[in-house]
Length: 212
Image 1 (tube, rainbow, N blue to C red):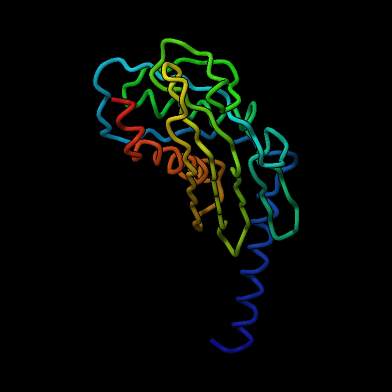
Image 2 (image 1 turned 180 degrees about the vertical axis):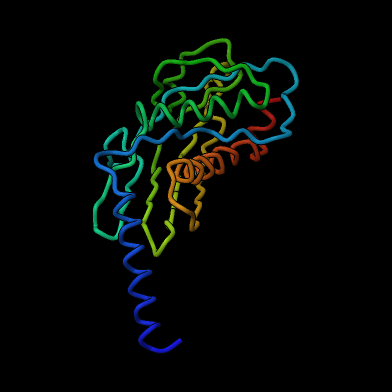
């Protein structure tokens, strides 16, 4: 291939790429469906242990429904959002993780994460926490999209019967990959990061004992 042909070929590919990305442009926020990816083959818990889950406190410093941003080469940006709030998303995902392991889950009123603030009766363990980071960045690169998802949570678990905090855990997880752009690929990346953080709760020895 001569240099002139190479230049023409490169310009042609570049033009196609520009058309492709222009076609991918969207107006307004992009709604994503994020949730806990239930692992396969998880054994159910022995007995019907009742666990309470309180709402999470969102300390990300972001609008309560915004979970990230999408950027394309034209510098156009779209907010990535969820239906409802990030606080509700994390609480619902933790409930799904507990249910997947055979626990009975009970909604409880907002908890201030102190031993004195636990008012709930009839549950083995109470979960609440703080969302420090839950964010997804989607950046168009060449003909693919670079996706970076990151989740950082502070999980607090208390025993209402004893009136004591059982454990405070800082958990985090991230996913970074190059994919073809689609809302489902963005959803998968952040769902995996969220699931990876939540799953760390069930690896803690102190919590394992309380949940038996």
